[in-house]
Amino acid sequence: VKLTVLGASPSFPNPGGAGSSYLIEHERVRLLVDCGHGSVSRLFAHLDPRSLSALVLSHLHPDHFFDLIPLTYAFRFRYSGGQPIPLWLPPGGTRFLAGFLASLNIDAGFLNQAFVVAEYVPDSPLEVGGICITFAPTNHFVQGYAMLFEPTEAGSPRIGYSSDTGPSGEVARLLSDAELALVEATELQHPPGHALRGHLTAAEAGSLAREAGVGRLLLTHYVDADADAGLLAAAAEFCGSVELAREGKVYEL
Ligand SMILES: [Zn+2]
Ligand SMILES: [Zn+2]
Image (cartoon, rainbow, N blue to C red):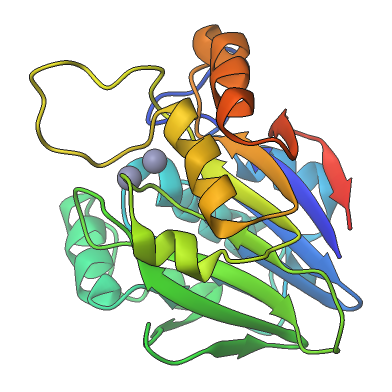
């Protein structure tokens, strides 16, 4: 299994960076997970997007879906003629995107030029080629889902992805024993006086990885300027391997 980090920035891009996006490959399956701002230029540097098996979005915040627009234009003007690719949205996503596109004066059928748009059912596993995806609700400001990617071949390594979440037992349970977990570490410290949680501190990302018993932790969705301190804070909570997810880097499992 191969993971390519296309974007690991938080709600604004780090210098030279891009919003959340990850490419997971296993044999002939190529799965794009989230499609944040600036990420498709990196995707195009890796592959012809017509070779994607499917896209799946964790939630509909701009830093996780904005590049669907340039990606669709690319299919129209540069990569036309392939089969439409399944685009899996969280529940309610079809209606949400229809409203969003209407606000841009883009016609309702826009995404259908490139995709077969559908919504996943979070209680049921979703199979894309040889990869099974299971979901858990996140603790975030909008409805969103953490995901576990598990090749159907017995004994294959599993990759967990927290998406955006505050502390959550359900996310930790989903990521249980994953060989590698991408866990968001948006904050260094939670701002005092803000009761509402929708993100993790780097230390909490480390505790979540410990609770889940993952093999290897990749911190993502982090602010570049806080990255070194975040890495230390996470490593103080989790004694396995901890790294920062680096945009453009390929992780082989
Ligand atoms: Zn985000
Ligand atoms: Zn978000």
